[in-house]
Image (cartoon, rainbow, N blue to C red; front, side, top):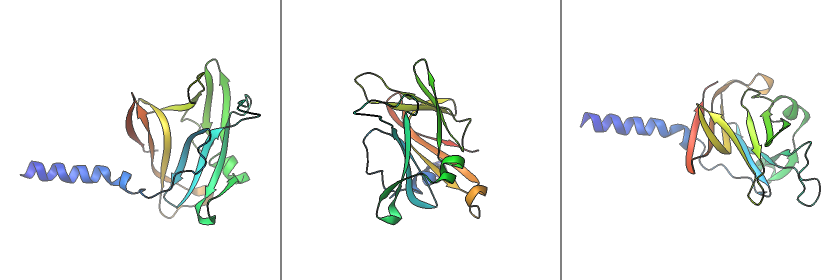
Length: 173
């Protein structure tokens, strides 16, 4: 009986980070959507999509476009502010032999890899805790009492798939 009770408590505690962000909206513009980021300080969403130059021609110099959807402003979609682009949610990319290597400016060591296979949807992969993940979304739990450029992070959850199975990997910076 004690073992079962402990197991139930552990399962409940393990699920808390996932329960914490239920009810968050998904980006409304899914055209070329690669992944998106949300955090516990509001439901506005930062989304990363393929950046097309013309009619479905990927911009080879700047393949990922970052925008924000402001749910507290009736879902308005806007570009990042200069501060967001330079210090938080902006992304840098460089061409590789097979796709692109990218990094979000606030997480430069967390490498992202953009793949654009012919006749299949593009996707982004990253490695968290030694596991390769096809990324769908990221949730950032910010520390209470921090904000602006001094924001500190409790943990980051990476949602995606590994071997075609849904996974969530937790990174504690």
